[in-house]
Length: 409
Ligand SMILES: Cc1ncc(COP(=O)(O)O)c(C=O)c1O
Image (cartoon, rainbow, N blue to C red; front, side, top):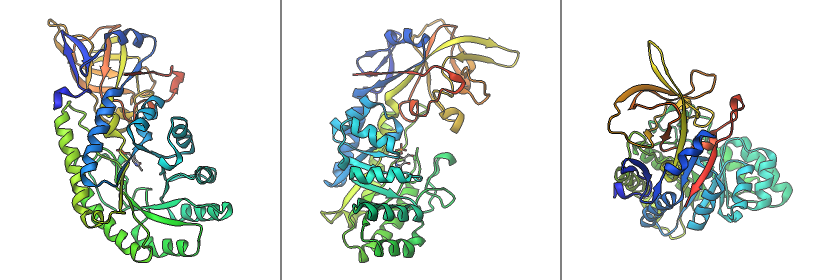
């Protein structure tokens, strides 16, 4: 399937195309005004459908809640809503955005480690589907607010299983040293809070072990621990039936290999199916997931114009108009993004460059020591796979201009 993906970047007559329809050259001229994020909506739909089909094989009672933090562009959210997804949010702002884009409150899961009083009040007033609680003080705060309002929302306990999923330390979330989730050993205190607060209703448990997971042995281990915990809780709270496996499925940034990613998707859901087999037999059991990156990463590109080609005795720099203020991932996680020319020229040779932005920080780079086709001033480059954790993490640092964001349909 790989090269027929609607997300594939390839050349037709030396011009860069996206999927089977989009000639990207008309967008290049816009990148000199300001860098442009382009989003490929058919590509996102394709990924959602692939993931939907994979989960359908696991259970008819499986629900996908797209993790809006990956990309909260309204048109993308409307597409997920139209495709049948629910939504995972981490702030009141994201709840508002979800509702504005057509999601009903009953399609919203509220995750996150630092929910404020007013955010919890808002979530309760909106009567959202579920709140994923991450600490004892958060549970106590939720109990107080629910009692005061005489309203409750289903509570899911996010567990920290202390399992390593071998991702970048800044996106690992399932280790004891991380701020996320409740320790399983805290169950006696958790239980006490539920027993003494009739306004709280326990609905299930959740996990989120980290992002950009490429190996699923840690996931299997965490699911085993979480399943045992689920069964332990169920003895006293027989009504619990929701099990949220979180997000985290990774993508390949180094090259485009969609068939390898489909295989990863298959392996990932098989791990969940195998580890939760007994629970899945119960027709009332609901398995949930909160994917972000896998659904949208390949459906975003960033077009940026070369301002200067700077040569020193040590290096060649391509200084472009997009930097860490628009794409923070390389500075933050030393992450790799493919960089492609908009047009191929047979006679051009490759050169080694540092591709850097205009920001006054030495961490402001998009690529280091990268072999690329020779590029010149005023030409536009395409930074691939920026659909997830791209524009959403942008800032106006140095009072740089905001990026343009354009959806193609
Ligand atoms: C609680 C939670 N759910 C889901 C996600 C989405 O993860 P990913 O984009 O890796 O699928 C995240 C991301 O960090 C998260 O924190």
